[in-house]
Image (tube, one colour):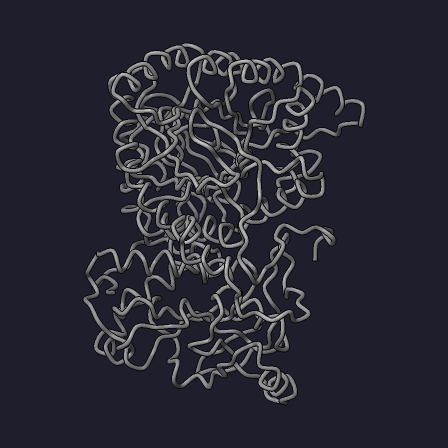
Amino acid sequence: MSDTQGLHYCPDLLNYQRRKTREVMVGDVGIGGDHPIRIQSMITADTRDTPACVREVLELAEAGCEIVRITAQTRKYAENLENIAREVRAAGCGVPLVADIHFKPDAALEAAKWVEKVRVNPGNYADKKKFEVREYTDSQYAGELERIREEFAPLVELCKELGRAMRIGTNHGSLSDRIMNRYGDTPLGMVESALEFARIARELDYHNFVFSMKASNPKVMIEAYRLLVARLDREGPGWNYPIHLGVTEAGDGEDGRIKSAIGIGSLLGDGIGDTIRVSLTEDAVHEIPVARALAAPYQPGGSEARAGSETVPVPALPFSPSYDPFFYERRRSTAIEVDGVALGGEEPIRVLTTQEKWNALAHKIEKLGDYKPEAVLEKSGVAAIDPRDDAAVAGLNAAAETTLVTLADGTDLPVVAGFRLLAARVDPRHPVLLKDTLDPPAGDVGGGDNRDDGDFHESLLVGARRIGALLCDGIGDAVIIRSERAPGQSLRISYNILQAAGARIFKTDYVACPSCGRTLFNLQSTTQRIREATGHLKGVRIAVMGCIVNGPGEMADADFGYVGGAPGKINLYVGRKAVKFNIPADEAVDRLVDLIREHGKWIDAPKGEPVEW
């Protein structure tokens, strides 16, 4: 357990309550307070190209984006925000614009003249990151904070004068050397980095700001946001600032959507989050439907918001969670054999399916490779109970035999709350089977495995935010997806959730940032080429970064990195260390493969029939 006892980030882990915050105005759009959860995105065009930027802003607004961010790398770029803002307003679009600032305080001061909000990253706004190791005395550290104040205060004063909003947005990948040396590469370091800037703003009586704590690893991101909210609550009622949520470098396709749903959905479910951005390595307009779907249950009138305003049937039981919300550790169950498969304890988290779906897949089980079902629900001997049933809980806890347990279908509990209660009440030795729904659709099998419709994406997002949230709490020894009726697709969702949550790695893991005006190559096509070349390298983690803003830091957990160094030039990394420089872009994927070979991580792609779903 961590040293965070006594901290609380959520008033009730079993009943939904949205966190109460102060209102922050971004132009005419309110964040926090009684406002709905706002949807944001970011354009990808070069900020110097006014027509392209205006076109993308209008497209995002038409798709339902409520706040649009634009990069401003330097003062020269920031100056053109005047033209972009003028043309957007001339087109009749009132969506607020946000300047994204890294490294350049003078760019922030220029940008604040023309846009409604400025995003600053405490890790690089007035600081540096060279991975230097240095011990700071308290007086030296205080001196560094005074230097930061001198750089940051002018922007605060200008935003206060002009009525601009601000986001103090920490990224796990760009913590400064100063923070890294004192707090380490940790959620605590992320929180402290943001609080340093917030204290300066508050000393200047400026309060029109929001926080964010982005990371590419959902576990890190969830822990950082929880710790931030707990620290804000401890500081006092005047620290009730709104929160912007996002998983940075989530990637593309199903993987990016699932990773975003795990991180964002978990926090929204605990009442945290007033504005969100889904960061996909795709055209930005595709982010909006995903973000809206994730926010919908928690908007006024949404299913979770309605439940939170009603009497949810969770009794006032003595409840202490089975996990530390600020430090990930898998729940310590006992390993048992279920339908011929070892499950629980330190065994891999297993994927179950129903007998009907197993039968539907029987003709191609061997073609499913590593992604086949591992056990059948009806043969698992699982004990399905209502965790509020004292007799059922007592019977399980008194039994000599260790048993796989799950929530009974039809139990009138929210899924996440129900499994949290189950994990807390039954003896830890009993492994837990996680379900995405307690009300599965009638008829277990239906639809085609190759369909790509709204129902499938709804199943994917709901399964990810429920099961993924529980996995990040350390709960779960097996999973089953039942809201998706197509047998192969339900398995794909299960395995992709395990991969995105870092619970079990089955394939190459990619950290890929979304495109923006800083990007030095075509991220979408490049990411696809890298996938085609390396997608068979099970367990290898590759970062694909358009520029150096978050690259070295977010690649701390990656084996290899592919980073834009200059227009048409790529730098290759091993971990966070650059080892190959200024490689022509048309050669860089092949050179990446060579680098993977040099470090003994390469295997040839298997021959034969491809894996089927």
